[in-house]
Length: 476
Image (cartoon, rainbow, N blue to C red; front, side, top):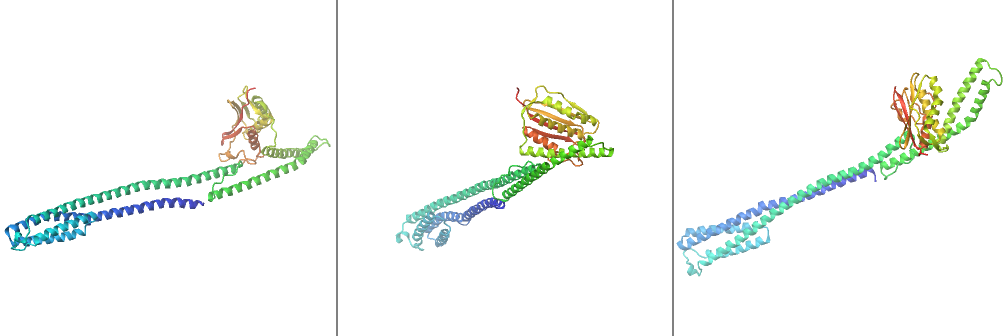
């Protein structure tokens, strides 16, 4: 899946969750609004009508009693008007009731009121109850039954009101709970999705960054692991192909230099030997100008032959073809030999050679001649880049499992931007043209073949310090 599709999917999931929560919340709010509307427009008016009807019944009974005693037509008119309003209220109440039980009790109250109305309404002006066959108790009982039905109706309506209020509160709580849970969950989901994508991207990009650094340093060997088939995965595949082609180009370059070096070595050796014979005046005495030309030929031949030998040696080191004769090597003796070998060069340049002395018992397992080559190369570089009157120091520190040899000078130093590249093949700092650019690369290869490491520290204008760390040999 493409990276853009993954990001889109993660965002879509979060948006979908939010939409679902919003939709559910809207439905819940709609139900709450409907419940509140029914409470305001139906249940509350129904309760008011029921209370008014309940209060109207005793008033009707009082009017009916006064009429029965006094036979006053005024009370009859008042009773009929009040009874008409009660009938209208019963009709209005029917449209406000919500539950089946309320409707049932309403019908019962209407029936009881109709009975009461018919019993009282059949008595016209001047009509005696006895002659009509109606006792005074029957209307009172019908009114009482009507009041009882209205009381029960009020109780049921109150219960319905409380139920609706509780339902609204439950809906409100559920809505808030859902929102309070869904919003953090959506946030966590969004952060989780973004974190997973970011971690995968940064992990892959970090690998590519490390591999790029290795390509720059010339140490890129293993291909970058490819995860997935998105843009970063395709980038890693392209990078691996590029790395493979660079390694192939590097191998072809080494083969070319090795082949050329082999081809040049034999004729150069012949030229050097011929120059030596001429310098020794074997064919005959040379004129001063001829002798000078022979010296130039011999020096140039030695320099080119030394370059050819270094190229061949570095090629064998990188190919693992250089034999290492591993033995217990006395570091003190190794330091002494290296100092004696380069002392004439140091004295010729007016430099002081300093050492912290031999370390008793400090031994490493390795090839003494190759390790001597390492120290001589480092000391030779220090002498080469230290102005007259300076000093070159060689120090040895023995640890429990390692021996550290440091070569320090008071020379020109190395620019900070050039320091990471000092061990690269054929590389020299800007403005420096002495040497072949292979000496430190050979040093690094030999040290690593012995299981050690070499580091460079420098301050421009103050000098440089090269530290070689080698595993310490077990005590004999």
